[in-house]
Image (tube, rainbow, N blue to C red; front, top):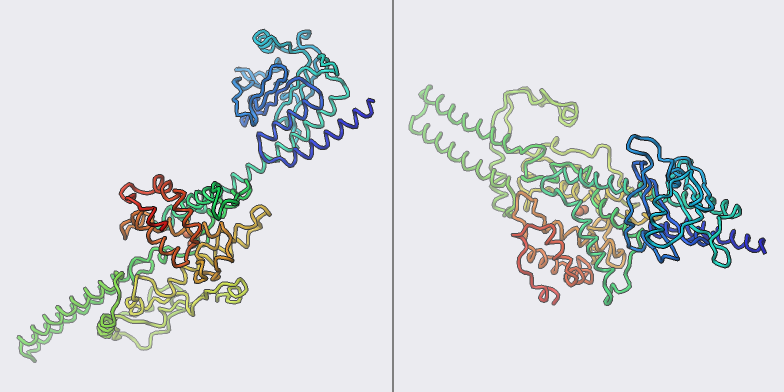
Length: 586
Ligand SMILES: [Fe+2]
Ligand SMILES: [Fe+2]
């Protein structure tokens, strides 16, 4: 009979061990530990304590008592009203008077047949509890939960073992090793859970730091990397909550939520290598500074030359003074006008009509005379790019020029084969940057050259390559795909891979919507007024019609009120205007 009972207990113990190692939820884990120990020892009640972070007290985590019908802590949702049990007195003396704190301090198992018959521990609290409830706390088994370093991380206390007639008995010698074995497995499970949690928290914080550093690179796009995850998670929540329609069956496990959060946080991580002056290129001549100042100085030189030519002519008496001064004034007025035009072209924005490009080219061929060696004071890199001076100064220079050394090569050369191997449809251009003055000033829309545009778009390629280089565990295996598809379009015209809707996962499609919505509604672009909510939603509705974003997800975004929740939390009040959702849902 005893043999059968023991076999049964061992089986329960093994099953419990397996269940504990599989449990990921902290409260459920603690409940399983206490329930398991209670069941194995046939105890009436019990308490599970965990040592606090500061290691100075035992925190009540879960408390059960069948007779008194008490179930607190764990998954019950009921708070345990008792304060933590101090492991030390106010003067720092270890608290050995309480059996649980003694157990935590010494790491030893304590078996007590009747708490009312011993003096070695202070059971006054227990006795007061008994008076209050009419209960009779008698036998106790108090076992430490030790981590892999042998350090107690908690205490498992069982009360009132019962025999087959439900009479309270002492915890038998046969049961103590089993409870100790269970406590040991429980400690490992709890410790694992803590380590996983700590690792997840660390990883999340690390990603938040990276996102913060990318956001900090640009005052224009600051906050983007933090707000895109917020929209993404709101939309994913709406999909999980949907009870009908295309997302009725959509759900995410705890691991998948974490995976999505990580992916969203890393979605633009490739931007760490995008130069700030490209991200923020606000004028056409901008590199690390706005080269309009350099161009303006050339115009100043030309103006001085016009004045000097006039004065020299007057001095020589070779020409009619009136002709000379009229010519000077005409030249000065033309230069003023030309510079104003160049400055206007530099600001960008407006479309560069062909006649404007023609005028720019005419201005460019005007000359000025340089009398100083332009090889002096250069960096080694610049010298490498520039050929030696063709002739000694003075040298006649164009007012604006596209020079060979304006073309900055890729160094080291781009690994085009990698672009092919990864299935990227975008390809690097022949040169990394082209700083040509005419070339830049002729940019027909905005301020970016094709090379600048590629560099910006390339952030997604870099995101893929960076994320693929990371050894993500199985539970985060989809982070690269989810993170790096947010510039793809449903009709296959996006980048970097030209994926279509069918080739994209739902989380990737969610992130595409989140990325555009955040960028459209962002208020931190100093060069433009933030868009209103209604305008942003209208633009995105037309994107859905044009199959740029997922139309089903867009309908969910509108119908679930994600847009409203996001607007209330993140947009400026002046952006949040009236929205006709019925019209947008059409
Ligand atoms: Fe991006
Ligand atoms: Fe983004």
